[in-house]
Amino acid sequence: MTTALITGITGMVGSHLTDYLLQNTDWNIVGVCRWRSPLDNVSHLLNRANKGDRLTFSYADLNDQMSLIRIIRKLHPDYVFHLAAQSYPLTSFTAPIDTLNTNILGTCRLLEALLEQTKADSEYHPVVHVCASSEVFGKIPREKIPTGGIHEDCPFDPASPYAISKIGTDLLGCYYAEAYGLTVMTTRMFTHTGPRRGDVFHESTFAKQIALIERGAIEPVVKVGNLDSLRTYADVRDAVRAYYLLVTVNPVPGEYYNIGGTHTCKVGDTLNTLISLSKRAAEIKVEVEQSRLRPVDADLQIPDCSKFKAHTGWQPEIPYEQTMHDLLDYWRKRSADTSSYLVR
Image (cartoon, rainbow, N blue to C red):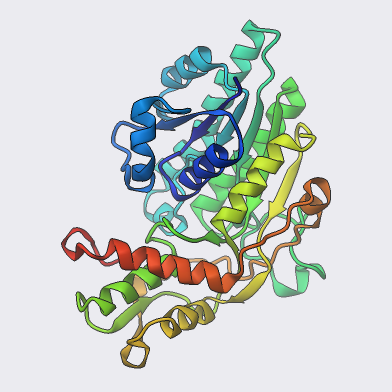
C-alpha cells in the first residue's frame, strides 16, 4: 500500500491535502505533528485516525533529528509532502532565529533522514515535495517583473527573515536532488487561502474580525496593515490538488515551480470584498494598526505559473469570490465561542 507522509498536517494546507488524498487516492496517510500542535484543523479527521482508517498521526519535530530518522526508518514513505514550517512572515521579524532554524535546518534534517534511509535501502526511492514560498522573490521592483508575471528564474530579493529561510529551504531541495539523486521538487506557492487559514494572515484576520463584529463581540472596526500590497490569490483546495499532481505527474528531481491563482488585486480590495459580504458592511470602519505593518513588505506578488501548468496540466478551478465567501463562513462558524479568541 502506498504511504504518504505529511509534515505540518495540522496546518491549513496539510489538513486540506489530507482531505484531498483521502478522497482521491487509496493511499495511507501519516501526519507528522508535534505533541503540542493544535488539532483544530484536523478535528473532523480524528475519528478516522482513531480507527486507523488510512490515517494515523505520528509525533516528530523538525528540530529533533532523531524523531525524523525514526519515523522515516519506520515508515519508508513513498511520498513526502514537507509543509511544516514557521510560516508567518510578520512573526519572523520578532523570531528570526526560530524561523531560520525550523525552516532551513529543519528541512535539512528531514532530507538527511531520507537520504540516510536511501543509503541503507537501495530499493527505497521516495518522491519528495519541499514547500518553499513566493516570498523568496521578495520586493521585486515593478519594472523588473517580466511580462506575464514573476517566473521561476527571477532573482531572489527577500524582504523578511521568513523569506530568507524559504530561500534556504528552496535551495536545499535542489541541492539534495543534484548532489544525491533524491527525487525532490520544490514549489513556490503564491498567496493561497480559504477555510482554516491562520488568523495571522491578512485576509484571514479581516474575515475573523468581520465575523466577530457580526456577533457583536468587538466594535465595528477592522484593524489592518498595508492595504496597498498587490497579491494574487489561489484557493487552498486548488493548491493541494497542485501538490498531488507535482508528485504524481512525471516528477523531475531538482525541478522548482511557481504555483498561484489568477486573481490579482490590492490587499485593500480583498478587505472590501470581505466587508461587502457582511450584513453590517455599512457600519464597518477600517483602522491602520502599526503593529500589523511589516518593516519591509513584498508588495508585488504576481506569478507566472506557465511552467507548472505545462508540466502537469493543472489549472485553478475555484473562483476568488467563492474562496472569500468560504473563508468568511469559516470564521463565522468558529466565532461562536468568542471567549476563546484573541483578536489579531
